[in-house]
Length: 556
Image 1 (tube, rainbow, N blue to C red):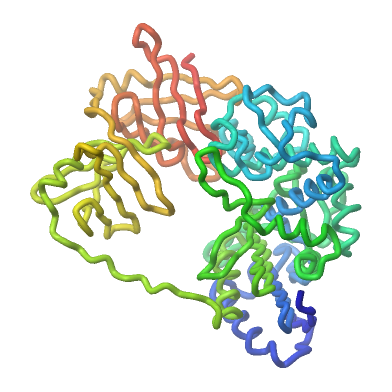
Image 2: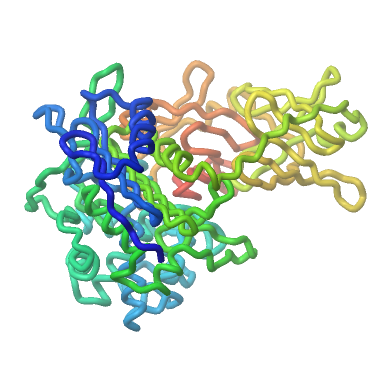
């Protein structure tokens, strides 16, 4: 490891200690200024370079009511960046021989529901357990994020919801629940309250003097930033002081704390080289052989040709980023109490400045349009179903190839080759796959990755009367909540809990007919109604909301 030289630059009362960093400092100021006005809530930026400098920046207001400025000692809720600390705690216990990552979690938490499949500690770490995420369980249950919420509440809602999103290790779907359970495993194995374990084994040894987990309303919050949403130069308080759950988040730390945590990745004090190496190295695959880019509280990716170890965090009022470029020995920390500042853009903008000579920027070649091969396109016409239940309908009319989406949206497709097409309306492409006999029953949709879809049969249309008959009251036992479906102005709509209006501005969520008993929504993904042996509608299922899947409701 290269030796660290600490040259500090702080916005405000501190002075520049090394002239070599002045240029970078001024450029970082410019990046901040693009998104922030001085009198508004802001945040902190920290940079650690193994080459020759450290930069610290503090900007904006931590408490609008008291007009209190942010400093390097102001505490921020780092949200999901906290997951790396939870994973670190698990690995420390594994080092001590107290945890086996491939052991069934019910060995450590015997009161957990029997999900019918073995779920391991490793599955929780990598978000491959299939256990639904508590943030969405709360939203679906109608529990807002600013009511008192304890760790016991967090565990109770996990234990109560008995369904799995999928069989363990068949998918990677982000789940806060997994990390809440990991915190409980730390307690079960170590005999220490999770906040005490982190304090004793991580915070204190690294001299993170102010870092803390707020786990009780009896704890005094000192020097803590409030979280805001800023619109038209008005800061609105949106953060909650009533969340006391932990494992997946709720660590409050200062810039000084997070810089010391970052330095442990370069100059090892806690955990050791092997542990740190594991956190930044891909090591596992799903059952189908797909490689996972999530390790122990970190995503392992590439950024403009460079290896990147990172995680973001976001809750109402707060945004955070922790970026580690291991080969360049560069760490960038961003913590904000203004949810309208793009933390990722700020962090990667800083990386672009510092790593300009090493970054590889691929030139985007414009897509070349070729003539349609009519005989081929005619074989692509029809409906194809994706893994989340969404159907893509392809139509060829008046010598033009179209993609039809639910809700009456249509987009023209342009040929790149006989079987590859692209859209100009947004960045997406489609590749049709020919079978051995020339049939086309499969495609790959290219948009933020590859998504396979298979052909479905002839589209089944429902009459207005049949659609109207789906209206009624539906209930979910584990969520203990009713969802009313109404038919109004020729439109089927779901009336969700008040949490959806509060956080998404959605009082009603339209259901747009796709095929048969399937409908598309903009909040619940695909919704499919179920029927009994008499063909009477008896419920519906939300197939894939993201962090929660296969959510089954029964008709009252």
